[in-house]
Length: 358
Image (cartoon, rainbow, N blue to C red):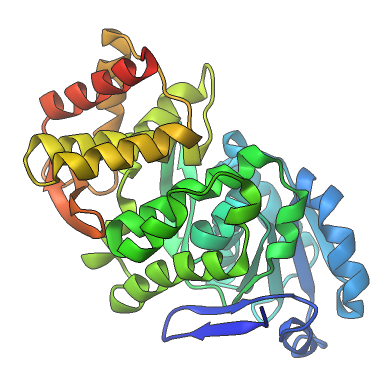
C-alpha cells in the first residue's frame, strides 16, 4: 500500500514507508536548526540506527535516552531532559523527534510542549498502540503519584509519521497491546471495523496497513470535531475509567500492560451498559468473547475491588465528585459523561473474576 496522508485542522499524519514519504523533505526544513531525537532503550537498540542510516540529515542529531516503562513516565525524568535541553542550547525553532511507543510519545510530547512554551515536535511511533492511539491527537502527559496522566497538555505534533515496518521489532504481546485500542475504536464508532478485526487470530493480520488506517480514521474523525475534549472526544476514553484504575492498582505488584487493562475495562464498562439495558445482551456477549480470546482475565478479591474503585475518583473525566465513564448503546455507538455508581463498578469487577474462574 502506497504512502497516504491524513490532513485536517488538527491531525496531520503520513502513513506508509518512512523512506518513501515526506519525512526527508520535512527534515530538510530544519537544516539550520538543531534536531533532538528522544528514544528509550528499546528504540535505541532496534529502531534508531535504521532511522539515522536512512536519513543523513539525522547524523548530526542529539540523541537523548529515556528509561523504559510506565514507571519512568514521571516528572523527575522530564526535569533531566529539560536540563539536557538547556545544556544543548535547544531553541524554540529546533525540532524534537519522539521515536518510540506510547510512553515515549506521551512523555516526549509533554517535554517538548512545556519547554520554552513549546518546541516543534513530531512523533515516529514504533508500537501498534502508538500508531493507532497514543501518538495521535496531541494528548501529552506523565503520571503523578501512581495516577495515570495526571499532568499533561493537549498540543498537536507538527506531524506523525507512521511506518508499520517498525512493528516487526515487537513481540506478539506488544502487538495485542495495540489491538485493544483498535477494538475500542471499532466499538465506539465503526461497526464494519469491529466485524473485520474481532476474528483476527494472529499479530500478522493486525499489522496490515489497511487495518491500521481504518482504526486511525475513527480517532482522527473524532478529534477533528473536538480537539480539546470538550465533549465528543471523551468517547475515546471508553474502557479507560476502569482500565486506568486497574493498570494503576496492579502497577505495584504484578503490572499489566495498558492495552490489557483497557481490554478488561471494556468488558467491565460493556457489562455496566448491559445491566442498564442500554447494550443488548447478545452484543455484550460478542464483546466479552472477543476480548477473552486475546487477553487473560484477572482475579479480584473484595479488598482489591474497593481499592480499584477508590482509584477511579482521580479519573480526569469526573465531575462534581462523581465517577464518569463511557457506556455503549450498541456496537459502534457510545455515550460519554455517564455517571456510574460504585455498586455498578463493583459488580462489573466481580464479573471479571467470574470470567477468570471459568
